[in-house]
Length: 189
Image 1: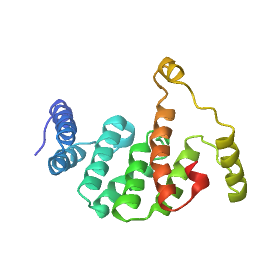
Image 2 (image 1 turned 135 degrees about the vertical axis):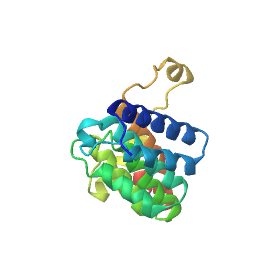
Image 3 (image 1 turned 90 degrees about the horizontal axis):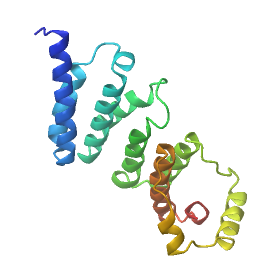
């Protein structure tokens, strides 16, 4: 049935809000219903006309299908986001994290999850040596030369506000776990 542009925009906004709320309540089946309905309301040129809403709906669906352990459906929505050249790597991080989590948790592929994590970190601007021997040498020297900050130093730190750095930290925390599972001590350090 046809509806006015104003009604379409209102319904789209309601679907997005309902999908977000469903996710907060861990009702992923409901999130899927609302987000998929929202996607049907997007214009044909969704990635130019409704960029933020499209990204949010597709990201929500990727996360919901990960939580529902439906890798096939998750991949459909993840691929749509990852193939958008107009999106920055930072905008794609939520989807990357889902794919990494799928590999690590559901598929039990810690090595692949670690490699993907390092690849995403590189795309976000982190630098890692590609040579394994150099990687190990730098890891050992960084541990030996590290001075742990005091509680006072930590308390004086201001909250991290840079979104790229926050995303990198989230990925690095998980990557440390993956490297431990694959006995990749240099990457862990």
